[in-house]
Amino acid sequence: MSPVTQRLFLRFPKCETEKPIVYNLVKEYDLKINIFRAKVTPDEEGYLVLDITGEKTKFDRAMDYIQSLGINIDSTTKDVTWHEDLCTHCGNCLAHCPTGALHVADSAVRRIAFDESLCVECLACLRDCPFGACTAAF
Image (cartoon, rainbow, N blue to C red; front, side, top):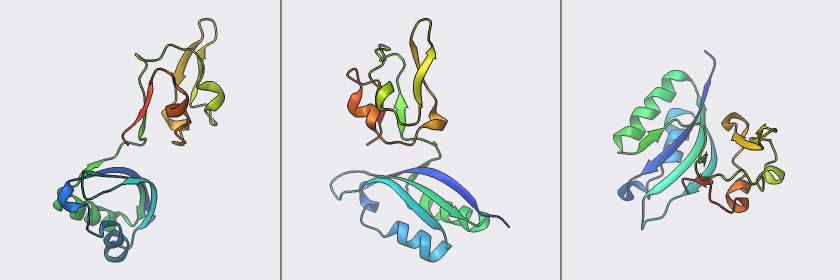
């Protein structure tokens, strides 16, 4: 059986932020974990963006374990969101996006577009957009 890989966005309730959940996913379910971004503190809700790779049955059991702890699982592929309604199409982001995820979709009117599949979550767009059109959950 070939392994499955899925990117997950986990939202932890305050009461679960001090548990060794990633350790348990590796040890108990034999999963490979690649952590992209994390913000977990005892004073607030925790967030974790990661790729999980493993055998399908073990992966499914691990998801049941995570949900049993009250952790919200979102299988969104990206943490970065482009808000077209806030974008003024100034083009400031274009030189800073290394993959072309933000690009000119229509050169006749210089309309910017966002291709989520090309985004590597470098977060340059968050720093370089003067209008806040790009955001991340944390």
